[in-house]
Length: 158
Image 1 (cartoon, rainbow, N blue to C red):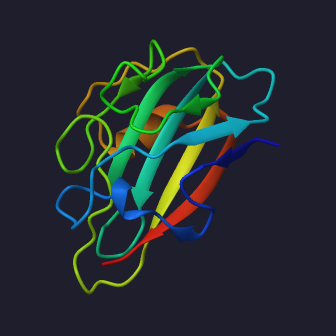
Image 2: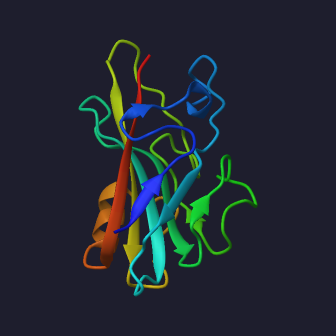
């Protein structure tokens, strides 16, 4: 069974402020560290999505990464938009309109938001998606190609 975890926070627990967007007091917009294991033997690549599922956020995309090599088992803290990203991995635009990771920045007073971090094991080597791919188009592109997935949820509120 595929498992996903972060050294920064546990499943269903608070995401530390340093990983929040710079619009949040104390936020440094540092991409969260992730590690995974247990991918099926037939996996050819991975894709990652971090999405805020709160009704106010309306499926706000915080990070989409495709073409993560099958030999990869982690994304280092702060890897987004740096040479720490695995060779071949492609970051797409987030809903903020910038490439790569965009940390939590929920509206004040909107309560706790759940940030779903989902890693998909795919049966294809790569996906041909442009940087401006929407979440719906991403989901359509991976449909029928997902052989396993693992999810964890981080919470953030301000």
